[in-house]
Image (cartoon, rainbow, N blue to C red; front, side):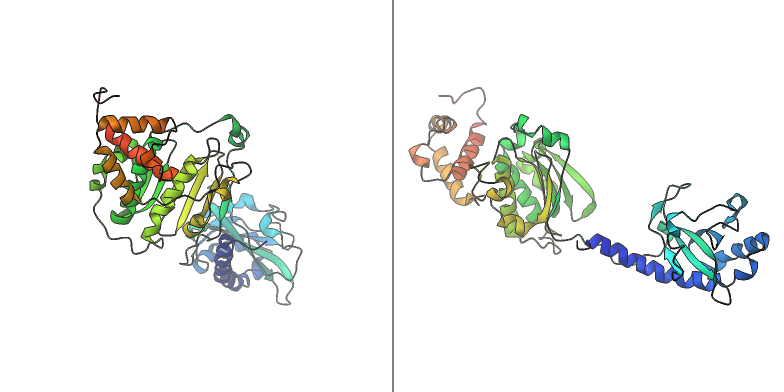
Length: 394
């Protein structure tokens, strides 16, 4: 199995620490040999170690069998109860039977006393003849050690994370319940597209089932903002965010943002049992995040996401209705049709809506694809919602 990018980053950091710490401990270990038989003088020698060894929290000396000879010493004093403590079986002493190893840096662990991430470095002590006569042990608080300035980079390959098994076990006992966002999804997608292209939002998480969205803005990237359905439904909402040029660090082409959002919609409505619960898009690292009703989560690059049709996600044998990729709607053309139909009068519009709700496609809409008819229906429905109390009923 190939080493992950995260493991490679950790390995590089450990190599840096080994080089930094190993040289200092090797130099100091030679000073200890004359005091190995005298615990008090050994402790005094170890107190001076803090002037020579940077970053250390505790120091102690063990004999060749891993039994502690000195007190456990920190900058403020010494704990003599540590003497005669057998450390041979501790993980950082796993090299004790390999005479060729002079320096060992432990894996990180949580310290017993302070409950902080720590590491222990162990340097072999050799006499004038090169024989191993003991070990110098030094504990470090991981936060205080030098780190490289290279930030771990999230890998570009697809990542899939399984969710709660209880949800998966009950998957086929549930079905999608129409949320408030579902009822106005085209409007909501348009708002998100505008926010990301023209108003400085570089990352969004759209929670379809709970009808809310979380966004991050380039002017204030450390703070997220929650938009409820009341806010998303208000066309004035974009006025709350200043206009900004498309973010210079974004790697997702602005023309692809609408395509990603359209695919979110397709995954939301593709099936009543397995459906998208939330989708996220980050334009800076180009990542799309998906969480489905089975609680499975996926992270992949936006271009790879757009290259997949719905059959990839659901499989045409189990879900034969989900075999086409999401359609990119020509909204300008459809809006012209909406305007033309609306001008025919509210009674005619209500008749058309009633027919569509009964899956009876009117002659005027038969040239349009199902997704286009769905868009026209939702837009006309939004227009008719301004009439209250059935004033313009059938």
